[in-house]
Image (cartoon, rainbow, N blue to C red; front, side, top):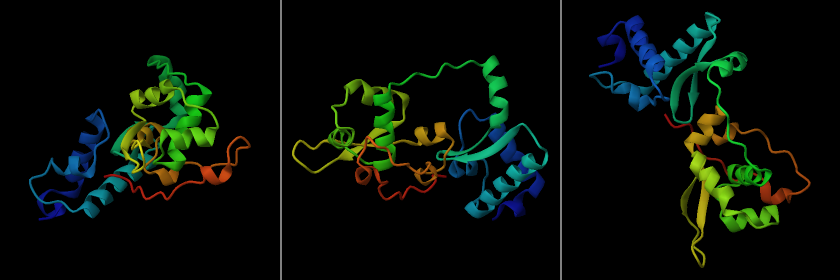
Length: 197
């Protein structure tokens, strides 16, 4: 049974909109399907979500529906953030240049080991840099390289993509050549990550 057979399209979209407006976190397609007692096709669900997104754009609303790595959510449009930050001041953690360089290497070359990062940067990595990125939820160990010592392989997380407002790694900005780094070592690895829905 399909959505339009069980519920009127306007009601179906209203249910989705209500769920997204009240959710604390992004909702995946699987999360949204749980609201209905029948099998729901992903294409119908995606189409309805795109219609909701278009409705909010047409209204010229300060709110927009976006699809991130972990699912769909409403958020304030970027031009309104400076005003909202006055009400909800969030002091983002300040990271050292070394920590940000480490994050960039992981994002563009993942999965990488600590040794890979040190080879690219040309200096040893302070354990606090890796720990700070793990604590933020931006990187995680995704396996171990099958070499002596089985070093941990680091990669970015969905949280990293969500915090940057991205659906997939392919949406990262093009890496410009940096004089400090060897360009061949920083060329992006194959990025197979599809948006998770």
